[in-house]
Length: 195
Picture 1 (spheres, one colour):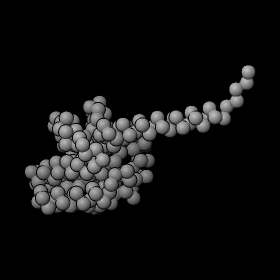
Picture 2: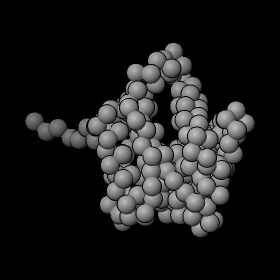
Picture 3: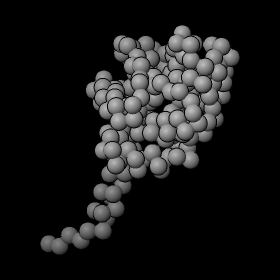
Picture 4: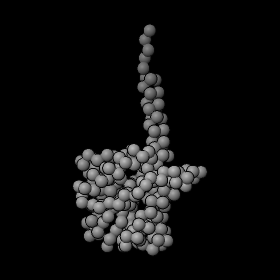
């Protein structure tokens, strides 16, 4: 079998690449860029993926262009369901590329992350497979979550702190600010002020 694997980043690719290869499947990666904000983050993830790929002798197709505006236009007013669109767009791009490249199947490292909506990724992948006429290779890669993290740290790979879109970036920083405020309140409440 020849498989095209959508890869969101290097750390999330480690375990899926390992188990797909162990299954005797011929593998090539695909890096989709449009959802990753800002461009500097996108390039950092792409460079890290290229670094990782060179260590495991993996060929990767890198999406051309950077249509952040198109991505945002399709998500605006649907922010609460943005993940559904994002999964669909990435998986559709992967499936169409797999079809053009005569791959037997396509899959995604989104199935590795414990932070993604796993069942939704699986269901969208299966639906796109019917639509595009190429098999969706489903496998739950989450059991390798810890192994992937440990390996990425050993390889000293850049590990991003949010999913990729501008909305997840905002949520990351808002969460950090709230934690910081709570810590500040807790520690300032314990201090004694002597005259």
